[in-house]
Image 1: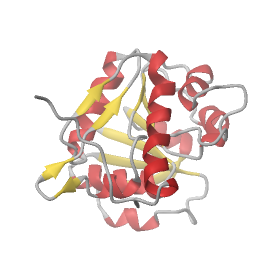
Image 2: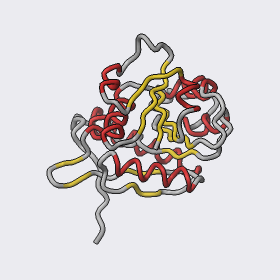
Image 3: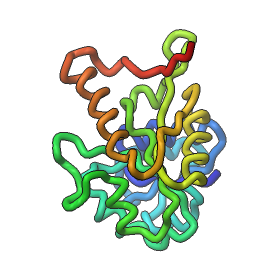
Amino acid sequence: MTIAIIGTGNVGSALATRWAEAGHTIHLGVRDLDRFKGQHLLENPNTTAHAVEEAVSLSDVVLISTPATSAVEVARSLGDTTGKILIDAMNVVMGRGPEGFRTTSDALLAHTATRDLAKCFNTTGFNNMSDPVYGDVALDLFVAGDSERAKAAAMGLAKDAGFAECYDIGGNDRFELMEQFAWFWINLAMGRGLGREIGFKLLRR
């Protein structure tokens, strides 16, 4: 699969590493080709850097992992997203998000041509994306969106990143629930002092 990653900070870098190691072709979409976070990612031969619009045009899937406040600006920078799958890994935290929108996913849909968007990779820390295995147990992820095509892609990529399962929690009307779940993890990890080395696993009886 060809994947554009827009936002090469902690989350984008962790997923770029995991997916490149799994054999996917990674196109980093950056503003400045000479200076950007995550230049070390280019050490993997499956990873190259491009201007944002070019990275999108070369890819089937586009991961957005920038600050939530930049969601509208980033959406406008993507170019033609017709036929592309977008995966939104952003969160509005403590009211900091795209002006006029309750979630980052709604902002992306309002400013792009594609309807194939899934919200995923937003409910846990970047450390768990780098290594989702605790002992002999792999963590789970969750995904939401109306697009079955986008959700299927996100689920597959979650497993390629080493997660055990990626559970479908519903459609676009569950975007806000996904962001609340992210805040739940943040609250435990930072607010309650449990630290980043925690994660979620769905158990069944």
